[in-house]
Image 1 (cartoon, one colour):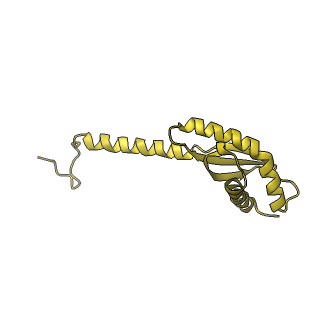
Image 2 (cartoon, rainbow, N blue to C red):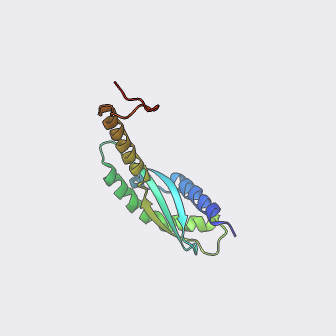
Length: 135
């Protein structure tokens, strides 16, 4: 029996390879599997993915089309996983858009804003480190 982390890594690698080489759906776009998390009983696999938007299309529309394409391909992908992994029960595949990159970008913007505000602020009237007053 494989450890959960190792099984998650194998499922992620296999799904990435299968989506890239076997799934022939133009709605998928440029999709990357970012993480796989198995439930405690290994009955459900939560698969997180990101999609690069196509030229002239917003990210939400591309993500929605990719989510539908992954839903259509879930049965095929699960069958292929069963053939490649030696498991008694192959987990049910559930796909979720990965928002960690967006959250990281938003935090980076907030830090940049804070730095700009700190640089624009006049120096404070703090006492000198050796206890002497400023003139």
